[in-house]
Image (cartoon, rainbow, N blue to C red):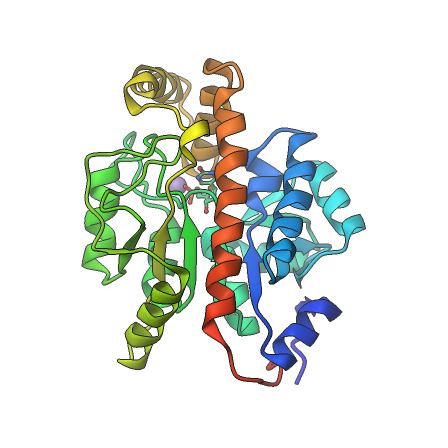
Length: 308
Ligand code: PSU
Ligand code: MN
């Protein structure tokens, strides 16, 4: 069966048919998270990183209103230069479809599409969460993590978010938060946050076993794997705190909220750190693609037919 709104790259179709390791990759990082031309370079590097570690990459995005699972290099180029692309979470897919738009999928959007395709492992930079600026601004990512059974590898969540509230929400929704070789929840640019994960695991094999145990019990949530940024690229939280506070104040003063808030804060912090944050962002993304590929290899998925 084929779904009319999806387009599956042949490499991804083959990998699914053979039960070969696959890593899904999000694309809001390309359309809204990073400036040009670093966004295209990063998109290509993420794919290379997954391949180099034995997994087929499947970057997920909307092109002309179609949900693509796996992009060609020409697609990546188009997406990276698309004027006014849509930021696609759950409620935005139908908008993109009926208006035939291009768009980058968020963690929530990517989880939805990857799950439809039967992909089990997904790498991103940082998840969305509970914002500090408004008690009502809670990313759809948290809901999606609560009911989509994938392993999501991230570097934690940025300290632009209310991290204790984000972790409380994940606990309420029954989402395991794994620390990869750490007991502490990493804060994206920083390795430290002072907050604890729900379990520490030290190898990709243990993570694969954990996910299988979780899902074999019938739970439907994601397994969130938090992978601290490599030490050489990390920025201490104490150095970031005043900059985050400044960016947050500016967002409030300028009335920025909703979907625009995360991209605004990311861009301001990049400026305020003179690009140091951008370099850190790229380093942690690649580090996550590598771990995701290693986990995907341990999943040993059974051969199955593509269901869309
Ligand atoms: N956090 C980052 N970089 C990002 C994002 C989050 O450090 O690029 C993106 C992800 O795609 C995430 C989305 O899913 O922002 C969350 O947006 P919102 O808060 O509007 O749900
Ligand atoms: Mn939001």
